[in-house]
Length: 223
Ligand code: C5P
Image (cartoon, rainbow, N blue to C red; front, top):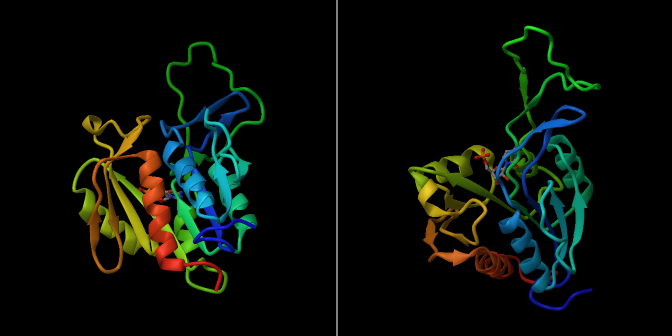
């Protein structure tokens, strides 16, 4: 068992992109690096929490002192999250694909002679943050989500908090000029039921530490 302000507390963190298969050799993906989610998992572990990190495909090493579960698709990420329950706090930092291919092929899709276009039908993926936030037995005491926005950042993050049913939202500015995607720094606001906190521009490691400290203040050690 760890020592520190979160000793005895269990945490779940999602991180990275998801890959949604088109066929056995192709997938739909996004540009999430996983840096922020991995940093949060490390920071929670550093404060003594027992952390499960459910990560989509990333090039980062598994953080030491954390149990990392590797997944590819959104559906697999949700299943791994459910398997990690119960937890005291869940932080959803993964960039989960909104859509998956409705009829992913078992065999490699072939281009037909004379074929000029190809249509994919997409179907909605489960919303992991909203699922974990659903009231009821087994809901984590604290559920934290991210809102990556390019405009009206705080306003949209507050709407997202209401819609998903989570407790806190870290709103981050991912407009092209912010350098957040793949970069090392993050500009965030912490949105809670009571209000919002503007954080200075911090490294992703520092955002993780600050969030973990705030979680520790709220939860404390094992009751
Ligand atoms: O709706 P949007 O993708 O902007 O919401 C972002 C937040 O929701 C992030 O915390 C992300 O991890 C989470 N999310 C999720 N499952 C999805 C979509 C988003 O957990 N299918």
